[in-house]
Image (cartoon, rainbow, N blue to C red; front, side, top):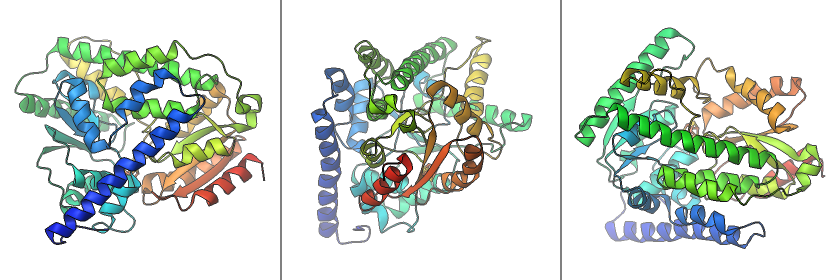
Length: 418
Ligand code: SF4
């Protein structure tokens, strides 16, 4: 379905058709979610945020926040700094199968499907923004500007790179990262045409700390079976689509009405699992829906599209500007569990620690075809997890529905149904 290089009228037809399919994917999932017995009015704020394609949602996010967007890939750029500069930090992720198919012809066959979908959506609508901040995480992200050109995306926004030290336990790595964050601050100030003051940064840190506290309560509600895992993921998916304080207020309204429910998975601990691996992005909720169908309940996860969509609370000990920037740099670098880091033993320990809290018996590891960091990690995690008595299943999938039955069969066998 590639359209780059095609005559203009053919290209327009292909893009119009793709845009209709992209919109239909979201609408179908949203309609199905609204029909669920456990849907309640408090979810509507999040469903509405997700009611357009991500490119159109970007325009909505700018309108909701009243701020120009600053587009991001990955979770390493401190959101508080971007917010304090007057921008709305907007993570451009896409779970659209149709958008992924649109960009496929212009890219290598094994391109990360998530980025392929992002490029497809940007091809349809480049989502005007003040700029991009790209942390040099995996190889696909580092080639992202080239992929924008290959897909003929009409996006002239300024790009700012964050060079990410892959060794975070070394002092020189931490110092280099701190320098990167100061340089990011200068870039944001140039873009905004004004300085980032200490008070503005303190306010932004406080706003994201409130969001982190709300997320923590939401996690607890999921562990206790008061919130279905699918809804947890949906609420997190809406995070970048709303102004941070508005999202927090919507979560608090939801928390106020969540009451204990006895689910099958709560009755039987064997259905409680931890979900790890490549991100799962709306509307590609194939795996969460299959997990439900197989009687598995995700009581905790470490996905950068879900529980880890933004880092934890930044601990501020020194309220000077230097202290605030240093605290942000530390929390985003040290706290990040992405497998692109070379020294990241904390990742497996995080799963063990969460087992005590969430009481799961197994780990489901999602690998998007072409996502090399998580693919490789799935092999190195399997042995230590099994050695600690956790069941483990690795599921490799793409942005397609064709492997649905195969995945379901494997999940049912894992659950012990078949
Ligand atoms: S880490 Fe994986 S999912 Fe994320 S951008 Fe890289 S390849 Fe894609």
